[in-house]
Image (cartoon, rainbow, N blue to C red; front, side):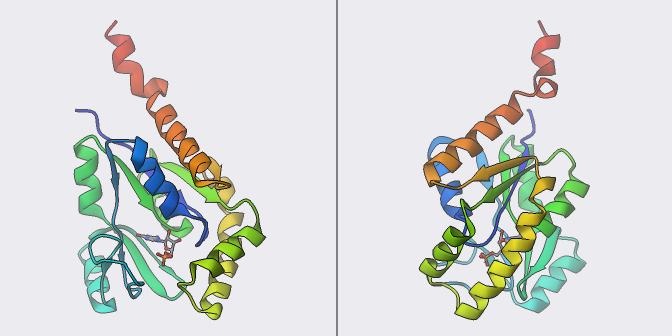
Length: 198
Ligand code: 5GP
């Protein structure tokens, strides 16, 4: 069976990555969204094992020592990491794997899995990003300020990504992401078996 592909999705906090991915799943099958581990506390409505695996710092470090993470990074005072096992199991089953991770995690994936496709989701403007972060209402003003600062750093590294999707509307962004995933499966390298079999 053909293995799946890794798609890394990054973008500043509040840009709407979660909403875009939710929309994508309405139309696209055979996709596994990796559930990260984090030491951040759950937000209202977030469930352990669904949105994140919520770990304490000691357990997170144990997972690091066991080499259980494909990548991990510290982001605004908390640790986040991608559990390796589920990613590899899904790829073996032929599923495409989406990693919604920050730019430092993306750098590690690019090193370890150079075949991974990196997609950056950007806001239509800074004003809009700020508005969305405030409207979301999940963070204190101080945390929002930290996340906005971090967002500027992240956007500066966006040119290292293969694709750039602007989330003006969730529908457009999900359509573009879907198109990128389809195009990646149409690459000549991917289709060689078909050609050589004819
Ligand atoms: P939030 O706290 O808003 O859920 O996530 C904060 C940031 O951490 C986001 O940019 C998100 O993409 C990133 N993130 C979530 N999971 C992971 C992960 O497993 N690894 C890394 N490197 N970043 C992650």
